[in-house]
Image 1 (cartoon, rainbow, N blue to C red):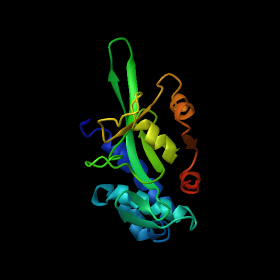
Image 2: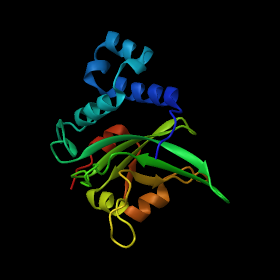
Image 3: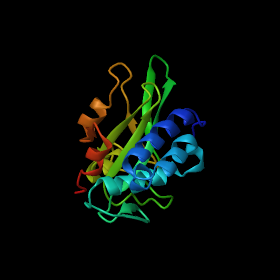
Length: 186
């Protein structure tokens, strides 16, 4: 599914602040930090989030950026945004986690660590999707692979949470980036 680029300013602001606080390159160098915060469009924020997660793990895994996994523990790091669309009788909202399945049908090797922009609340959500849940999200009710390369997490607008989706699939939502980074890939 393709979405127009929306909420880029909010996304860039929140991700650059997160990176500036967690990446040693930016947190320990005031000049680089200033540049990142002033000009986030000049940086590959997604890649910097991946590197920052590995750093925040305190050595639990290393960022290796290989096919089907970002980290040497087999896990993958993802960024996403919550979107909403008006359906017949209700408004639905979801986060699309892209490229969970390759064009050849292969799933990511391990769990997914997701940093998800919530443009409605102007905040980030931190969700860990265990490997078994990745498979569940990418399989239809009759056991076949979904046609999509993306996984979709339902977001409840009325209670402003992923709670139902987390309960259904065994996802883990945590409060901080550091907590997300430190969850072990099983």
